[in-house]
Length: 288
View: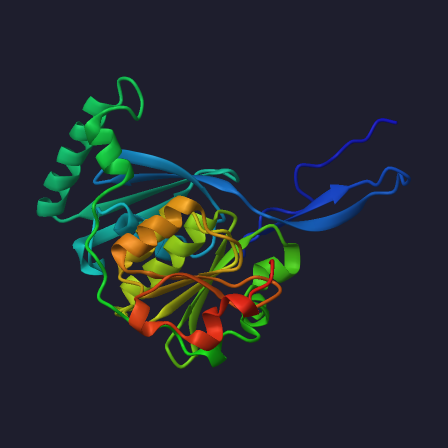
């Protein structure tokens, strides 16, 4: 049987979802499904190329600010003088951010340093320093109250409009200490979802001390670095962290919690005096 598929049933929508045809193994009649969009976004600063990221093309402004903060290029939103986002075609976008002269000079120095360290891959001292930067330790913050965790998985799902339509997407949600949802962002990449959320907070001038970020994904060391740079106090993930993520969270003073599908929250990093016995008791934990 020869099957002919259209590239799109309809043009990509501005909400990050496109509709595609598919066939089952037993049917020749075509059906269709909504799929999450993934595009290439080239990022430059003052016309100087920096990177190409694969993202879901929603909340791009927030992503650019969060990504720039996570990369250590900016610390405040007002350090970006202007930015321009251009859609080249269905799969390619370009964004150029204008930095202040001081930051542009620092950015150029960083590019030169990286260029000198890439001759044999990530093997030089400078390259390792870029991969595992020595970030400042966070100010000690109590763990979230135990009553915040029941139903938290369901709350995150309720704030995933794209995920509930098409699946295959990560989410990051920001809560204050009282458990109020302040914002949520989605992206096909877990790092991008967090960058979008942190970019929103940066643009809104939200101080993230004593705030909680909840993510649908596993926790890798990159997520720890992004959270620490942004000043997040607590990171909660629905999947397990890596060993390096736990080590970095403990080193930098980030409260790191895994919320398994079954059983109690697992606190992997916190200040000893802030632990909740009713949350982290080993006897209450089950495999998740």
